Amino acid sequence: SPVRSSVIIVGAGISGISAAKVLAEKGVDDIVILEASDRIGGRIRKDEFGGVSVELGAGWIAGVGGKEPNPVWELARNSGLRTCFSDYSNARYNIYDPSGKIFPSGLAADSYKKAVDSAIRKLSNQEANHDSELSEAPSTPKTPIELAIDFILHDFEMAEVEPISTYVDFGEREFLVADERGYDYLLYKMAETFLFTSSDGKIMDNRLKLNKVVRELQHSRDGISLTTEDGCVYEANYVILSVSIGVLQSDLISFRPPLPRWKMDAIEKCDVMVYTKIFLKFPYKFWPCGPEKEFFIYAHERRGYYTFWQHMENAYPGSNILVVTLTNGESKRVEAQSDHETLKEAMEVLRNMFGPDIPDATDILVPRWWNNRFQRGSYSNYPIYFNHQIFDNIKAPVGRIFFTGEHTSERFNGYVHGGYLAGIDTGKALLEEMMEVVTRKNESQAFL
Ligand code: FAD
Image 1: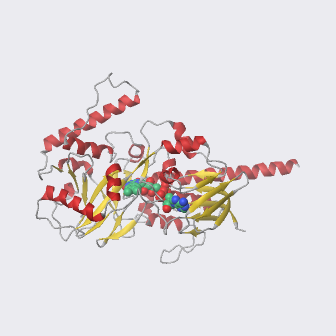
Image 2: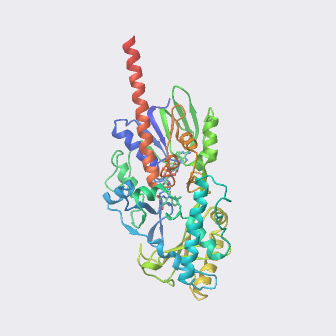
């Protein structure tokens, strides 16, 4: 029969690894980590592309330079991770129309200001729960430039509009990870403090089990039994489940008995954002470079159509790589078509901006977070003013099942530091529960 561990952690993303570390540090080391994919990191994932290491998932350490230190920025500094400051403030002056003309800076600045004001008005209407007739109604973006600005303000969560806790607490600066070892190097550094790791950085500890897709979770008052896709059974006193909100909404894991109604309701209420960075490699550069040119914008009549561009010359000089970001509907559309089709669309947009003579991209990389059954999206997306009860329910344990992951972080959901801090929180909550059980046992023994 299967060996019973104290705790099984499902998922080896940043939240699963940080939860496991908290447990191991307090002496709970008969743990097992079951990870569906063939690597740790989850949504922190690098790939080789065009001769450099690119980040398909999280790319930035968001929230730096404020009154409190961002814990992920601290981890990055302690492990010597190479980063580049991202200056978005000039993006609004690099907006191209479909004929390749850059909008005059005055017009661009005005449109930007109007969009920010309108968004702030809309938000304060929501906050006060006002009828929008009480104050001036926010305007709806219609023209290509208005649509482009609306896209970067909302789908990029610019700090100017919304009081996003990450920027309020940790500061408004963002740093792009540009390190050949990858953003996931932070996870390996964390893992090596409690998992046996070889001198060349490979995790050799058999408590970490890769390619183990959990499909069934049976739970009772006495314990938990997990069955993986390859037919293995694992038993534990407790489980920490770190899979994404998209996976919880899917039918990948069957719970026996099913999760209670209040839990399912809360899980269904959380939106999933899809965010796709498409990488394109070119034989040479044809776009303007320099510090104020890193980000540029394409204004099109369709919102979010190849809108937001970045060149990688600051991160990797001479790499000749461009990145374009799509979200939600556009992400799903592109995931469903061939990369060849996507390359054609992207080239047409680039030729509109830079003229017919630019060279074709020699390579393209299109991550598919939406269709990845271990992710089902990029990150959770809660409205700014959200019912706290729903958060509490998403996070709350069900019997011996504890929940963690970026979506359980009330202040920092959607970010790497959200996942990291959520893992620590859940690890501590479980330790408390385990201590209480011991205390109760001792008390009842004393009584006997
Ligand atoms: P995950 O990393 O998803 O970990 C969960 C793990 O569970 C995964 O490894 C998965 O394989 C595994 N799993 C799933 N199902 C099963 C199963 N049935 N059995 C076993 N294992 C399973 N954040 C930032 O701070 N800055 C950014 O710039 C940024 N950009 C992003 C861009 C993209 C494209 C994406 C996708 C995310 C981005 N994020 C960013 C968000 C950030 O990556 C996440 O918030 C964070 O990595 C989530 O960590 P997690 O541990 O909660 O989840």
